[in-house]
Image 1 (cartoon, rainbow, N blue to C red):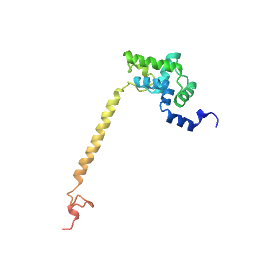
Image 2: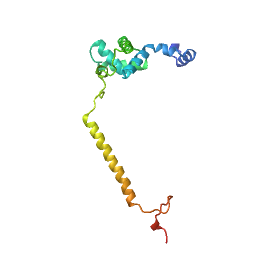
Image 3: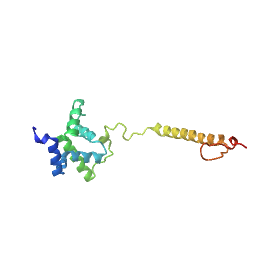
Image 4: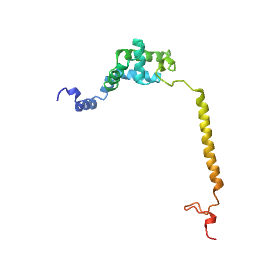
Length: 162
């Protein structure tokens, strides 16, 4: 059957016998996950930040797919990402890191930016909705006549024989 460690039945058996085995194998990834949670960013964004700090440049497009595959599918954490995540966790523990600092959210396209016209547009949309729904309710109450019954077929007093 080849390498027994690649056999899914072997992997299942090992997991059933030692449930903490996966956590031990993912120890480095758990550090990255915790650091990303502390900064309130995604895991891959934390990898981008770590790459930028370590190499002093943005993550090249050519490495993105490979890094994503290694990290997400094979749980392999690069040394520079592990180092950065540990520094973030230490800084958060000491209170030296502000998780709302713009440096940590450089890859968030809409982080902390509120358009001044957005509030006005929202108010106009709510106003239109109130006028539309309120007008519909008023119009419905004006056009209805006294009903003979609350149950279907909803006949009004004029439809009943006299």
